Amino acid sequence: MPSLKKIRSAQRRRIEAEAIFEHLSNEIIFDIFDYLTGNEICKSFYGLNSRFSQLVCNTPNVHLDLSRTKTKFFQTFQQIFCEENVTSVELFYDNISILASFMTPLRRKRFKSISLLDLPVQEFENQIPAILNNFKDDLISFKIRFSDMKCTEPGERAALSFAYLLTEMPSLKYLTLEHSNGIDPITYMHSNVINNTIINLAISLFDIKRLIPLLYRFQNLNSFTMDVHKNEGFRGKLAQPPQAVRYYKSLINEKTSMEYPAGLHHVKVYQYPLTAVETIERLLQFTTSKNLLTYSLFACERPPVKIPVSRRQPPFLDGTQYHDLVRKYLPTTLKRFYVEYNVDGATPRTKIAQVKKDFMKYNGSNLSCEHCFLYDKEDKRMSFDLTFT
Image (tube, rainbow, N blue to C red):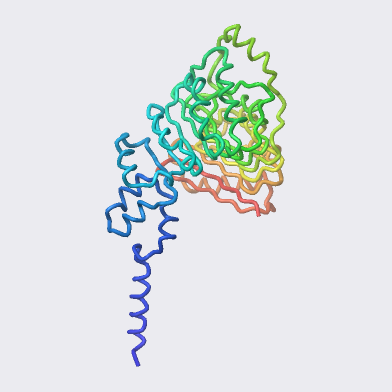
């Protein structure tokens, strides 16, 4: 009989043989390809051997990223991939003509996502219906990164294009609109513009008060991500807009009550400057719903408190006012509350214990939740993660 050592050695060799990537089934490899762009698949696997070259050519879901390569890659792509298998594309507006390659009925049927980068607002006003007309019935995800926010006064043309996204795309579920200074100028639309399909919205704003007339338009919204411009709160007094703009805004009858969709479950806010307790309260007031499940604040700056505190005291969650806000605005349905913020100077690990102690002091030691306080010394960033059980 073979010895136990030989049996274990044979078992180990069999396990190692089964773990070789090339021995994986086609189905598993295609599942892995779903997490990669067509560029990455082509560069990493095409030409590796005859089997992988064949797999690359027949990849069923191709995510084409033309934002980091020259357009000549598209010619290479056409020679390798099957165009009918392209499901998403990301490209600069200057290369918008490439979309014409996917306008046949068979190709459009599988084409689900478009990301347009560096789109001028005036092209948004004039070209969005023409660009999307051939894809509007099947498109599930759409993203725009604007190159400017210089919309044509008084803003009615931008409103029409925004309304087109909300009312003329029956399959749209994921919408992203971003600009480094916020997309505020194009958000003024008549109150009758309502969407019932989008479940995930990601936008950048300068003035969080724009959320009041904006969020209620998305009646089936489930997840909301907001990137707030870092200078919000320091903007100062602005000059009055031209008379034509004021007149247009007076006619659109935007709602000023916070009639947010009841289904809003997840909120993420990025780069928000917590400049004062009042600002934090306004943020929570504008972005919470009665069925909220998770709420996250990322990369927040250190907020001042009403009562001066010692430098040795933790920089956040260190006063009753913050804990009072959490209790006041975050609903009982909440499952997770996460805060990540920058810290001035070197914060010793002992302060993490103090933050935890303060939290338990202000919120009670009998909370049915798990809490995690971490400090990243290299990035000088503190994180607070509260998970309710």
